[in-house]
Structure formats: C-alpha cells, structure tokens
Image (cartoon, rainbow, N blue to C red; front, side, top):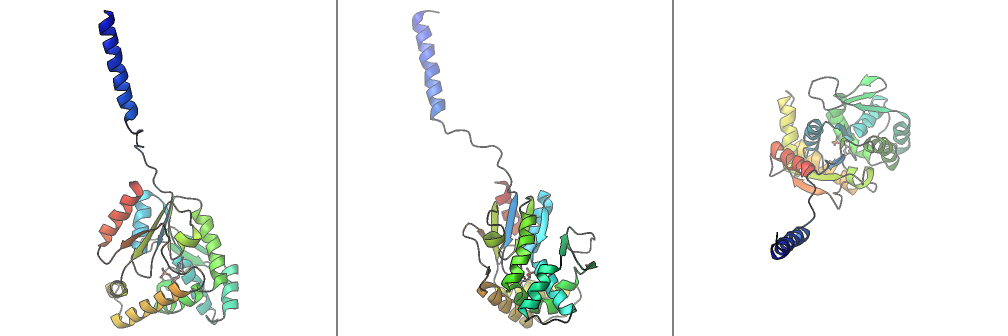
Length: 255
Ligand code: DC
C-alpha cells in the first residue's frame, strides 16, 4: 500500500472513531424492576386490585397494611373494649401480633389475616369494622406499632405494599410510588356493586356518606395523613378501567 492510500485510510478510521465518541454513551438495555413498590390512595380506589395483580405478575409479596388496622379494630370490638379509649387500643396494638401472610385459600382473599390463632380474613371486611377503623388508625401509638412491623417486611424488598402512608412514612425509600385516586362517588359505586355481587344488601347513599367520612378522618388526622408523596405518580381510576390501571402501573415497573 502506498503512503497516500495508507494515510487516507488512517484519517477515515480516525473520523469514524470521532463519530463514535460523539454518540451518547449506550443506554442501559436492562432497567431493574423496582424492588419496593408503594401504592397509596383513599378507600376503595382500587389499590388492592392493582397491588395484588402487580405482585402476582412480578412474583412479589402483596401486603395490604389496611388489614392490620382492621385486625386491631376487630379485636377491640370482639373484646368489648371502647374504640374511643386510645390508651387501651394502643396497648392492644403493641402487644398482639397480627399475622398477614399470602392467601392459603382460593376464596377471593388477597392475604390471610390471623389473630389469636383465628383466621379473621373475612370478619375484618364487615361494615362495623368499616365504621370504626378510621378512629383506630388515627391513634399515633397504634400507627407506630404497626408501621414498625410493616417497615420490617417492606425493607426485605420484592414487595408491593398498599396503604395510605406507605410512600410518605412507612417506606419513603420505595423505588416506585403510585397514588391511586378516584372520586368518592365512583368509589362508593364500586363498594356498592361489590356488596351486591356477593349477594348482600346495601344503600349507595349510606356507602357514599361513609366513604366521605373516612376520607375526612384519614386525610385530616395529625399523624401520617392520607396524601400523595411528592415523588408519587398519580393515577386516576375514575377515567380508567382496572385493566388500564394495571397496564399503566406495570409499564411504570418495566420502563
Ligand atoms: O384500605 P382499608 O380500607 O382496608 O383501610 C382501613 C383503614 O385503615 C382506613 O381507615 C385507613 C387506614 N389505613 C391507614 O391509616 N394507613 C394505612 N397504611 C392503611 C390503612
């Protein structure tokens, strides 16, 4: 090869190299799936449906923290205690272990809830629990006791944790935070349809009044009020079907 051809090839080679250097560094082809996923939002916004499906798809643990507040409320009523007695309710939350584990039966449950050796999974969804649970959940001592247990489970990772304060207080380090919102009317309609589909009776107006009352208590309490974390992604399930909510949330996990 003569000198002229040699230098011409060399300069082309350097030109190509320069071009390569000008390119952006390679983007990661593999983005890690978030290990800790927090889903918060008001009552009946579809958090449990979304959380359970997301956890199942990703092979993660599904943990509904509302069940713990419900379990304490159930215990207070079962023992004939006064829900308004903060000291007694707080002591109960500090002393009684609540076991929340993956479902052992295929009867529509998303978790098993066991207290005092009793499976109370279905008991804690009853209307008398709905009416009293916000009072129990507003007690700072109850929240501290339950949050410690929730945090211990959440920190292990590969978890979808659902509640009101997961992204703000329990697991502020969560890799993905979703706040699932919907209007009170839409949420009351869902609860109403759910009760009817199980063969129960209900009044839509009464359910709506209770949804509004629970929203007020949950979002105005002094400790850990219901609110979206600053870095949460807000999804409005009024305008989306359950499938669309899932697709959006799943997309956030893998993209
Ligand atoms: O999601 P749910 O309806 O099962 O919740 C029951 C109650 O517990 C509700 O009043 C809000 C409260 N809660 C809470 O304060 N913090 C959580 N992390 C989960 C539920």
